[in-house]
Length: 154
Ligand code: CTP
Ligand code: ZN
Image (cartoon, rainbow, N blue to C red; front, top):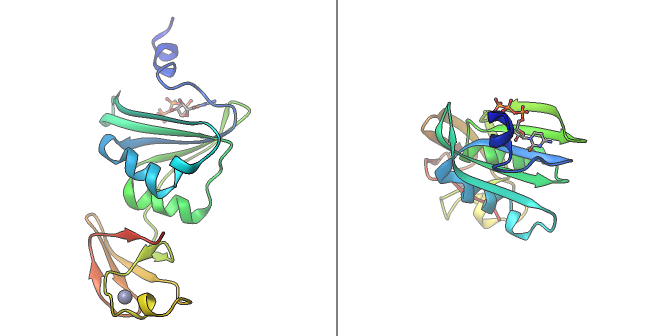
């Protein structure tokens, strides 16, 4: 068996769905959690501490029959900015994109300021400007508070 085939057997190929590759090994379960993949009812393949030439150790998540919306893609980018998102159709790679942290983040992140209007009123979506990407630093559009530890809205 060729080395490539052997490697592919580590986490088997999927027919249709999304592969999130090159996740830092320590962030795999965080990605599982923010995407609520523990509740997903189709197949989910998770590999962690896999050896990778580029990254030392990496994680990978393959989700059968799932194509993520932009909000979810941005969540992945905030946790694993160097991950690659791969869309698979009929066993073929049809799209491969390197994730990027967007310049503004709406709705998915919670403001840490308890007095912020977004935490008081139910109908105001959060809105942050990314002031620094590495390490990540966000500023709330409403209360102007900056934060480095991000929490996601449920
Ligand atoms: N993949 C998959 N199911 C398929 C096709 C591909 O799960 N039907 C996965 C592969 O296991 C790999 C990723 O999608 O993790 C990208 O596939 P491919 O571009 O073929 O792999 P590489 O050339 O190894 O990609 P890279 O060098 O970017 O890691
Ligand atoms: Zn705020």
